[in-house]
Length: 353
Image: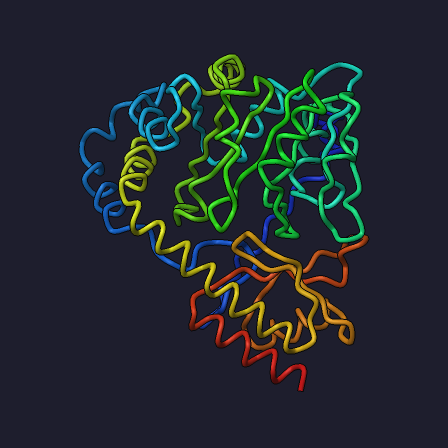
């Protein structure tokens, strides 16, 4: 019955999220979720907001949440945008800032796989820029000022990080178009490009509460940029859904920003476990890319990645395998709790013999 469809929809290749299997005693290391719960104050804020006020629409401007984010990042509230997860924020940015007739959008060839999906959905011409031989982004490959740019920092699925100096170079090489820095994983060892916003009118930074703040189940994302960029996102949002963030998500987001000690400690534990896992994998013969995210990207010269993934699955441990050119011998392994990490290491020791 596809003849009822918009013909353009038939051409789309939808994004495939990491699977969420219902398996008892599963060690789930495939979707980069936090291994730790939200801060206690966040859970209490959600409970406190679960009252008769839910019969009312939320604040369409998310005023208190925007102000809390502005205070946290030392920005003005007019430089903050919020939405239902960073994917929705990115969708508005694709429509409002990245679509230019006859101009291609540039992003890495190995990167977040939602970018080409949004290009197809919004009729944007994609132009992929290959990572270098070390699977790293080289800002020099983006010179030419020929179109907008979007890239994750740290990159996904590689975990490699660009410094603020490299982001600055990227911005200065491309002053005529928007450059979006997608910082879903920035809290695990990187420096946020939000520090550059006042200097660069073409910079938009996106972030999420899903990873480091353990709120993937609520869907809350944000963008930061100069007011003229934020206004474009607001125009798209208010032409699509003027009430994007619900009361519970706003309360949780504000509370999370007030629980900084808990947030910092959770990130510290993830980074410590990441180092422990990296050391183990390297001792087992894996090549592990330097990661500043809550996952590692690795390969073993003597074992097929898909076979390793299946052997782990047989032991109720799931990791992410990408059957794509250049990375089909790599596994992306999310950083779990210390106990999950121990179980992973024990399983790999058995598999590798």
